[in-house]
Image (cartoon, rainbow, N blue to C red):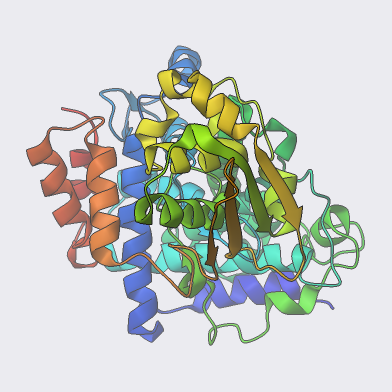
Length: 448
């Protein structure tokens, strides 16, 4: 199909905030609140400090807030760090169909732009929604059957730069032609390998994709050109990153069906495909009394993608544990919890945790949805406990409530802010749409 890039550009350029459904606007605010918490929660991680050590040597104008930090960076570098921070604890939002993390790059780009020029809360939410929408639809080109994208390609890295560029283009007031070039320039920078999972390299993808999107918009604003067919061309994005790409999916029901409505907010700091298993194990652990040392084996039935992306039976680092199916299975059954505390080095090295991880046996079935799983715990005396989860917490059919997101965000803000400051930030973030200028809110997000 021809004209996909231009059709999406036209949609973004002509979109109006008032035309968005009320539920979609609200979801934009929910995504922002969740993103602020994730960026604050990851702001003190080792990968962020190492990145800042590099970037400050080359930093330009110190004009942009770094969430949870005292440092000020230029817009491109702040975008990089804030997006990377939001992914540092694997707590960022997820689009289930594509396994992209759309708000990480979009939120970072918009926050940086808000300190460069006046942006109202409504314009911020509007650009966030459309940036998320278009990147998820572009991702659909690559994964909607019979399309198939190589398992090694990071969807977040492939499409995040496109969403970030579109959001920036909306704030910069691009018309259809400039927006088309912007999408092409962003797609030209798509990159990222899932082989970097369980390392700082995975978090780097999120920072890189955000900065690439903003750079694409800055270039397009100054007349930088790109072909109109960056997505659908015979040597373009679709055919380069998938076999049998389904271009039509990117424009079907455009403006009627909203991808942000299926955005999932994580209740656990881990890869989202692990969450159904975590839910099932927590259900067993919290409803029953048993000695974890007496577990003989743990039988899991789950979607194949969960195993492909997160089977790491012997994690030795915090980064590896975050995306280890076996680690979260073990700690959920032993500690009856699955939070940031369960990523502590002492727990990672716990002999009981290591022994329990080794007892995990996995069976996959394509018929099991990505939001579903069954866990069966067999004990040495022959007793067995079982739980099945059809829709995990945070999924589209079992979404986190506003209160759930507030609690999660408060917990992560506590990494960098006092309790009083964290409570104030959460309250103000929920008022995003009411702000005449978002730079006022942005300035409160840097550490005092």
